[in-house]
Amino acid sequence: QVQLIESGGGLVQPGGSLRLSCSNSGRTFSDYAVGWFRQAPAKDREFVGALRWSNGATYYADSVKGRFTVSRDYAKNAVDLQMNSLKPAATAVYYCAAGRPIVSTIRQPQAYYYWGQGTPVTVSS
Image 1 (cartoon, rainbow, N blue to C red):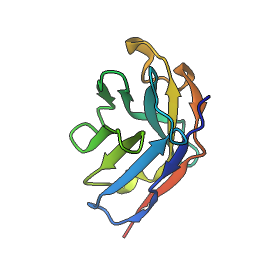
Image 2: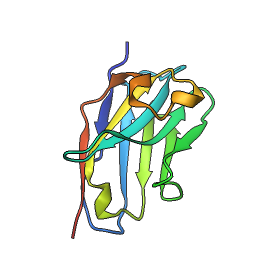
Image 3: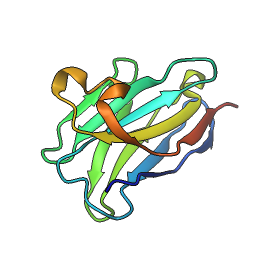
Image 4: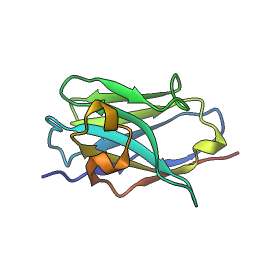
């Protein structure tokens, strides 16, 4: 069973950093991929990044490549999203999701079975 819990959202100034974490209630993600998505008001849910727990392979949206990093935390059985050089356009509710997508669908929300409750991120001065 997968029960996702996100943490780490909040208010940050433009150019600042924030780290989000997604855990499976302390259980390992095993053969799942964990994706991070975000949804701003009146916009569609957007892919941010993803990681395959089994081999650590990562995938990123072009808009965040080089600034955001998805990583595994074995000690916490969590997948973290490190966000640097944040811009106001990054303001959204951030969700983590777990599933078993193939490479061609790893950026698609419908490829994921389980979703967390979301954590809000606001980038503003």
